[in-house]
Length: 381
Image (cartoon, rainbow, N blue to C red):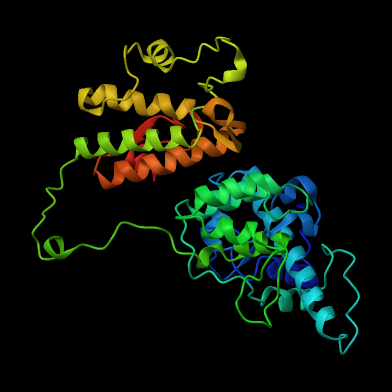
């Protein structure tokens, strides 16, 4: 006799939907209507538990069932939802207590919930505190959210001016506005109104994450006069020169941000002449047999060399979560606490945009044996 799966209790379903803000839990989707998925498959657990349930749209649910979204990512999205709800509930309670006593007592928490009843969560999630008008992302929203969740981890409290978060905010947004607003919490209010709520660093970060889909992405400027009137025509052919130059600029930018510092540590005046064997030329030659590849000279590459170098740097980058300026003898910047996976994900995303805009029919793969290797753009979709 086949196992019968009982329905998910209605209070539990409501809790999961409220926790996700009544939208798909995948940060880059946020669609509705919703279905409830088991993070660990029902066949293994044979029971419904709130911590194992997540709200997904039908499309993302199907993708998860097919294995196109991995379980680790799903656990991150679930934890993100829980952290956001926890923080918004705290903020709502703090606002209420700062003005007057609640007119009616709060309902008792659901023992199966993450700490707050659904009615209160719905009220908390409706609040808007941070003004997003001047913010503009240069990272894709899903990678920004993933990195925030990994940095803050578990139930750790966020401090104003947290070094790793400030570095991320400076990098993931177009300018320093977000990082400066975050660093200034506690010294000033986020909103100009005297009645505004001076929020905590914890609340600020989690509201940014919760509302990340409201933040515009930096994009290429709209066509200018000559372009809009047909003065500049695209041939539709791959623009290899454009791709080479933009790739070299990408590697230069990542190098300046410390993404190559794990592979090639910067010399320090305190090292007293110690040799770290940090020679990019030797490493590139070891990997693909190309001599004198560094500094990059895009005009010297043929197509095969260009494509090989793309793949090499994928395997060399790693995102630093800490940075400090060593002022003694003008030593310079030093980076540490490297995160390889997020560094490579960002590299693939940025490079694939370059390839797409240059009409080159290849992309760096995102999974399996193709991860970090060029594949047909059709296969990568």
